[in-house]
Length: 411
Image (tube, rainbow, N blue to C red; front, side, top):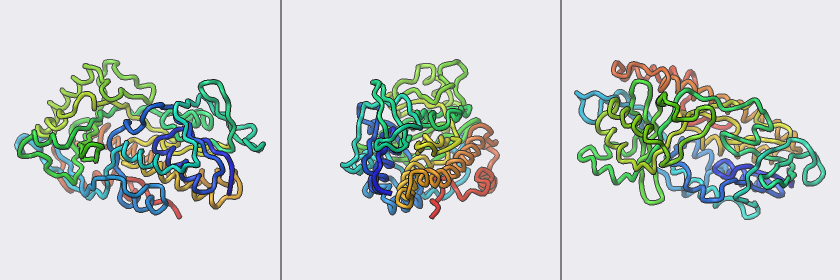
């Protein structure tokens, strides 16, 4: 297919990848509508991409070459055991063939890869989308309504606008994120500060360490950063039951904004449950680099239809345990570009995308739910686990899936 006008709602990782993919595939005019006026590169902290997914995505052109990344080789599961010392007791190790990235550095590379022919408009908030009407050339299309009141028509509107997608609300209004029953605390700090911890400083730089405790887990790993290596951590647990968090909407306390009560709750959890080394490591995080995010998931009833199409978190909200969010967004963009080249009409394009990416999103949501139940909602008696028990427990979560990090795309 050649030509056509495309609006991409959202200009972060998924939005940049989609805009680049359809422009390269032959779209006539592509516009990105991003509501944020400032630097998106300041958002987020760490993420990981499976090595096999990265090879696939580089080959497709969805993942630009040369992005700084930190290689990870294994995952260590540890539990507090005062008899074993400050680092806790090692329960199990497993291969972990991933590279970690800094969200801002990844977004910057994707943004720089967007072709000059794409119009990237910041400060444009889309308030509503209509899946019917006249497209830019008189054919059936879709319209977007902007906060200023203007309405623009396009042949296709792609929702890359995340958890609270306006495009998803138009395509399948009954598909909304559901609260999983727990939250994650996130933070990061300068890796050089690990020297303050003494002899155990940075014991395994190529590993992800998962600290296990009753009712949760905390994942700690290195990432590159704009000013040098950083340590990124994500702690999953139930929230305090005092009404400090809104749990009816997929929102979060931004960096530096958690209340004193939430900070005290986290401090008490670390003191009670963590091996001393890992408690002291997380305490190196500045309050300005700490935030809290309720965990949600969602399976969209449809990912395409009526000249509307969903990509990334707009199409499926997957709990972070699966370590697949960035790869999935880039795979969505790749699938859209492949479909564009093969299709002779928008209807054929939308039908093919729905078949290819709808099932992929549902699989990721289901696996992440199993991982969340096992690692947060219904944690085992960690202190009683050994290597064999951990391996069996892990396979039970996978339930036949080949692993975490997402699957290879279908040919």
